[in-house]
Amino acid sequence: MILEPGITIAQVYDTLVGKIRSYFKNAGMSKAVLGLSGGVDSALVAALAADALSPENVHGIMMPSEFSTGHSVSDSERLAASLGISSETIPIGAIYNSAIGAMEHYFADGRWDTTQENLQARIRALILMAYSNRYGALVLNTSNKSELSTGYGTLYGDLAGAIMVIADLYKLQVYELCRYINRDGERIPEHIITKAPSAELRPGQKDSDSLPKYEVLDRVLHALNEEGLTEEDVLASFPDREAAARAIKLRRSASFKVMQIPPMLTVGNHPLAPAFKCI
Image (cartoon, rainbow, N blue to C red; front, side, top):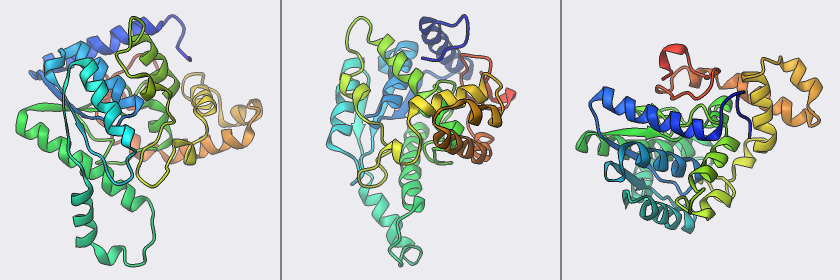
């Protein structure tokens, strides 16, 4: 795992838990809500929130679509039970189909693209914000630094929230922190940690369809973000030049999204967002 000098995984955990707790105290809030996808990012955020705010103050919402795998909900249910947080399932299929029907002239050609994918993400944000307004809970964002660095997220969808909890952690760091949380027993189900990551916004989707492998991507991003290497340096030094070039291109195109994200918790000295958005 890539960590900045002098920072241990235990310190990363303590920092995030402490900053979540401080953020809610300063906001005069005690309750949090987040979407549980069955993936490792939302699982980590749920665990950190439960430890920071106590489980009874954290609520998870599973929002499966027709593209969600069966284990997305079952893994999330196991996670919620393990952490002791409340949870519920609200399928988004009916809302999605209604929205597509209302805009049917946009989709008359039958072409599938990110429009349909982003619509699903924004429906999920709609549900989370409805819960937030109704019950006075802040929405926790679950995007990581690898995704943010490459624009792998939907504005006003899965990039929405009151605070970005793991936005300063690369994907490989997310896995490492999950392992740390499980150091004394399985709090985050093992299947969540070991299965292939996917946004599940289209049939058979995997993160690797849109991104280089995280083992390569995170190294490239760390070299650019933390080590201060130029794009030319990275291209010259990385064995997989094609993957490095792909990561660089994605990073260039992501800047407009980074400027619109919620406040993010930081654990290092090189956050992506402008200084006024970092906590």
